Length: 501
Image (cartoon, rainbow, N blue to C red):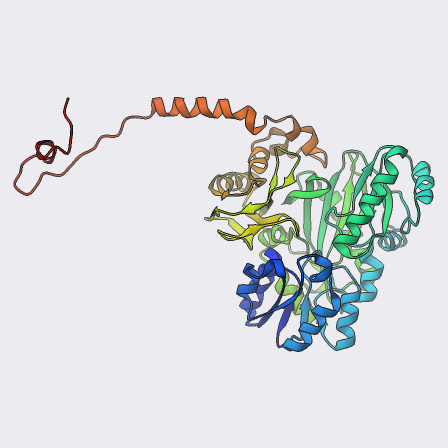
């Protein structure tokens, strides 16, 4: 296998920290890059070397291909790992790496163009015989074209970014009157997040489950599916909770999803880690949604279920190694796993971002609990980047055990200084619909929107605290006798330290 010498992590935050940890296990030196806003970031302090690449705005730093490749050359890094977001699905980065003789930890630029770009991925899926959501086969060029296509498809529709994912550049449109504003907003957000303002249109599937299949593939043609993840609990089309196995997927549907994901990967010669995403409707029919040609945010869910280190597998494949699960055998998940994404957002105010200084941070631990985070006490949370603070992951031998561990972990989790989604996650772990596994992508609007707000709960909390205080037995205090055998209470009274009435 090839050797890298050093690995440059072209990202920030918790994913940069996550990649650095796997490199440490392998004894691989790490080069970090950072923006002006990230001078004191955790990934900078953890790396062997760190280089400033520009201003706080992503376009001036983490989206700048030339600067990142320049740092790789200057530092002697033989490989670049893009993490997720930013340049992870931009073929310009693997192209630049190929020109400079640097290994890109991910698929080739050619493969990325075919499968990483959402519109071309739909064409690939259809050619492989996999059903897709009705919509456009290419990016929308004008508002007039958008009006025409939306009228043919029928409302409601979704506008989505051609490049990238994670809900960025996505807008729901229920009528023609909303088209112009949604088109502008989607294109602007896509341009800011991925450096590409291209958007396309899909028909909105009503109340589906969002299920994805994690796969690994090497350059010998072997493809392995590592199980599915249910990502249906979302806000603004961005995931909040993921779990495996999905409580809404039967063995027959699971097999069909694995087969579809494998066919798509093989049809484009996919190499490295990737994720095929599907929508599953109420009748059990599924539709290909997109292929994320990168590591997913929620990859620890699969790691905890299978016992694999996916970053390590990525690095081994990038170095020319073969899958240990040769022949396409699928290691069955050995346990249930759940991830809660801890965002700096106010769940009681439409999940709007919360900024400020983290005054106090207490993260959970214990059996079956894992925290992926770049956070630390005293860090400043701003508006420049995604508000993800941490990923809280638990596992259990059963789904019920995993849920119980998640409840315990969420009770231990304390963040003071910014609002977080922790109260939302606590709500979900007690919700009857979630406990039964009966949920879809509209869970937040249907259930949490009707939950009491923090203000509504204050009188109840005050009453509960008063009742608890009244019922709590008064503590008794004792003092050991002094050396001369006299009573310490009596002596204290004589000295005037205790007032008697």
